[in-house]
Amino acid sequence: MEQSKGRRLILCPLPLQGHINPMLELAKILHSKGFSIAIIHTNFNSLNPSTRNPHFTYHSIPVDLTETEASIKDLTVVLSILNAKCVEPFRECLAGLLSDGVHSGNPIACLISDPFFDFTRSVAESFELPTIMLRTGSAASLAVYAAFPLLKEKGYLPISDSRLEIPVAELSPLKVKDLPTMTNCDPEVFYQVITNMANEPKASYGLIFNTFEDLEGHALATIRQKYYPNIPIFSLGPFHKCGPTTSSSSSSLLAQDQSCISWLDTQAPKSVVYVSFGSIASIDQAQFLEIAWGLVNSGQPFLWVVRLGLVQESNWLEKLPNEFTEALNKRAHVVKWAPQKEVLAHPAVGAFWTHCGWNSTLESICEGIPMICTPCFGDQMVNARYVSDVWKVGLQLEHGIERGEVERTIRRLMVEEEGEEIKDRALKLMEEANLCLKGGGSSYQSLDGLIQHILSL
Ligand code: UDP
View 1 (tube, rainbow, N blue to C red):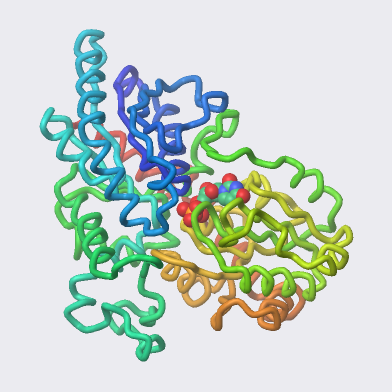
View 2: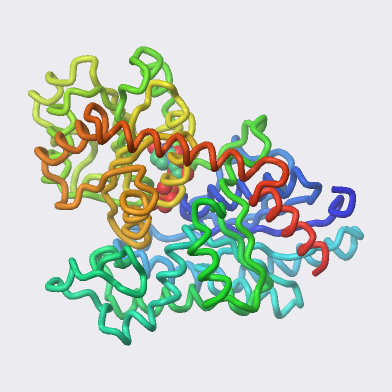
């Protein structure tokens, strides 16, 4: 702590919710270890000034997306626009911070960036500033991304509809249908974006994961030995359980509806199904109705996040029939955005129906909440397969979203004996998540290793 006192770090999150949250959690952890923190962020998805961490300095770069650009459904296009627009403003901002650092006698130790922000490392390198990468997804999903050239060579990619159920022998227990894909996107462009992202860390000074050894030891070993043998790999997650819990700062881009908590207070322990598909995924109107009826017919109380934009071509709930609203009575609560970590930690929550974004998956694991998985795109399919088939702490809706299957799956998890075993395993995994952060635990040691590494740069 003494050694890191005054050493300054610059962190640059990719401006998407699932990337911002872990980057800012990492910032809190490193701040608690004595580093001073500067955050570079874009005007697009800018961090809310009223909930910023008062101990950090924030440096906004004047990069925004037009309404048309922000509404593009193809994430690879949005990413390439952002990368192109950010290069020069980022360079200027970094130059300013480095020069301030020299003048104030408070030198900058390194940049911590996201490998999807593919210009940051080379810009930092031009100032001789080392970059460490934070990969915000699971280690298993990066191992899959890093294997993309092999998967292409072996004919698994591009995915063909006739081969969905075929096991990918090199990546057991994944099947072809679990390999990452992106909706509304040219598979060749997706392939290119992913291979660039997976190659970025190779030229960096280290790679950090928000995961832990007992959860992903195998994938981490593959990453260390096979794909990134020349850089140090740090697994110090789960971040949100590792940093100080007293800070009231939040990195949520949307206002979190606190009525969730008072509603949960009125529900029986472990009775509520919490439903949320994260910040980007979208569903069509038919799927929306299948979810709604599946939830109602399950007989369980539920808390449902219907984010604006979740349902295609719809404003919010107007597509729900009146009978649905009547059927709900007091058994349901629907909000636009929830304080998810608080929700998952609430004693009334018994299951999480999730899209299996990595943050959501890890947050659920940390609270011992079993999952129902509906992966939508990207690495979510890999995470979902690990939840259902490796850690066995959840069930997948294997045949898409259909009300009968939704109802049956909720019952299997919440009421039937099969669910009891899954719940037991989820509780054990939660204990492992807690243990790895304690003195001598793997994430505790990895954090020490990261600090020493940063100080040695
Ligand atoms: N989240 C939230 N409120 C919600 C839904 C999600 O605060 O109603 C947070 C959640 O806790 C997580 C992040 O948004 O930290 C979503 O990240 P994830 O990787 O799960 O999915 P993505 O949004 O990237 O698809």
